[in-house]
Length: 276
Image 1 (tube, rainbow, N blue to C red):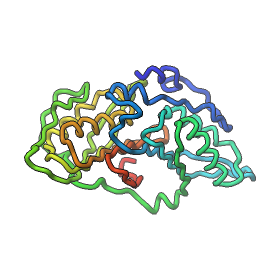
Image 2 (cartoon, one colour; image 1 turned 90 degrees about the vertical axis):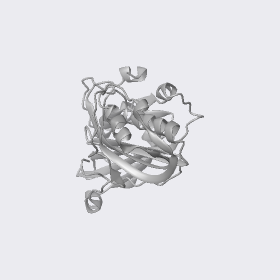
Image 3 (cartoon, rainbow, N blue to C red; image 1 turned 30 degrees about the vertical axis):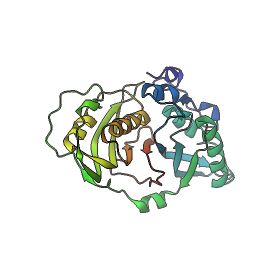
């Protein structure tokens, strides 16, 4: 378990507070998990963002009439802190009985509070249900590798030694899998996700990639660190000219978390998948 997470509200009974309480937000420093991966804030080999989508965002108009919307939050991958997910939900719940003059006022409040917790500016977009509904859902780009015939016997820890490539061939491709699963390091609840890999480098053996992804099945870690681990393991193997790894996780508690890590300064879309 991350040492800071022991003091978070995750896995504990929590009082429901329905009026604005920014102190509910619980930052967790990224440094400990970076250190596990041999990284520091100064040596991160990727750029990126964590997209959080909130499907339970509500507040009051000055008249007392409630509003519902969908919130999109983009937290820089190099921010000093992640925000513990249950504390994030409790904070958002504290808006439920809080009046705001308009949507812009709410957005400014969210930017201020979330940026203070993350330690870097956080992007906030409040979206109407109509707008999100019109977008629908999308499919991940490239080839799905889930139908490959593999044998699996190890599920406890990620196994980078399973990964294979043909370094005599340089390819540029996109592949993805919907078989990513890990566990919350605090509650042991399952986290279900889809993961996409886009790269130019030594040709990656697709079956070995699928075996590797499945080896996360009983692994305990936060969403962000799972994606960073996949990125680093592939970078070491492929020595790619460019590499992007991102995961779209199924929501829990009205929130989904979608980490993107890339060698490129890409502007990635935040489109929902069928399970989201």
